[in-house]
Length: 351
Image (cartoon, rainbow, N blue to C red):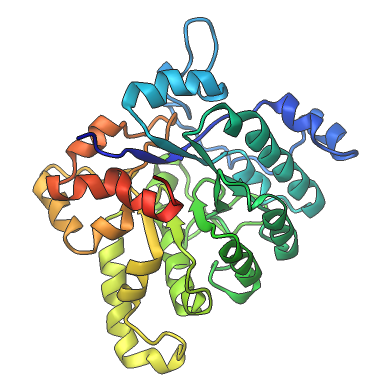
C-alpha cells in the first residue's frame, strides 16, 4: 500500500507581471520600477538559492509553472499534496511601508489563488499577511481565508517582538475562525522592520546565519506557550517550517522544569508546556540534522512525540532541500507513515 506523501514546504515563483497587474496605483508603478521594499542582508551563498536542476534545458523553471511543477516534481516523487509557501513576501512582510507591503502581499496571494490553485487539485497554499499592523492581516484573512485550498497563514520568523505577544492575537483569532494554521518560515531575520538575525547580533556569513536561525524559533515557541496563545485559541496550530528538529526536546525539558516552580508567573498555562506543545506545535523536517551515526538521530526522535509533531518537507527547489526518497530513509519504519503524510493530512484536512 502506498504511503501518503504530503510536502509541507514548496516554494513556487509567481509571475511578476501577474502581481503587477493586480496592484492599484501608485503601488503598481512602484513595484514595476523594481523598488519592492526590504531585500536580503547580502550574505553570499556559493550554492545560490535554487537547485541547479530546477531550470530545464529550454530555460523554463520548474517552480515557476504549475504544469512543470506537477510533471517534474509532484509526479516524479509521487506527492499526493503540496503546501506552497510563496517566499518573496516573507521580506515584503517586513516593509516599513504598511500600505505598499500589504498590497503586494494581497496581489501575490491572488496570483497564487487564481493562477496556480485551479491548475491542480493537489495544490494547497499558505496565504501571506502583513503582520506589523494586525488589522491589515485580519482583513486579508477575512478576504481569502475561506478558500478551500488555502490552509494556513504564513508569517516571517523575523520579528521585532516574539510572536506570542498579544498584539498578534487578532491574527490568531481570525486564523482560528477560518480553520487555518499559523506557519513561520525563516529568511527575513534582520530585514526591514524585523529584529537582529540572532540573539547576539548580526552574523558575518551565510553559514553563520543559516546555522543560528533556530534562535528565533526557540524564542517564538517559548512566547507562544508562555503567553497562553493556545489557551486563548484552543484549536490553533503553530507550524515551524524549516527550523530544524534537534533543538526541540531540550527546550521543552527546560520549560517543563521551570513551569513547576514558576507557573504562578503565567497562570494561564495550566499544563506542562510539553503537553501543550504536543497538541499545538508542528515542525517540518527540512533541514534534517544528519549526525554521523543515524542511531543518534533516531534516539532524538524518541525524545518528543515525533509521530504527532513532525511533518515531511522538501523545501523544493532550494539548494539544501531534502527529496522524499532521501528523507524517508532517515526515519525509523514505525514513524514513516505519520511523518511523510498522515500528520499533515490531519492538520490540513486532506484525504
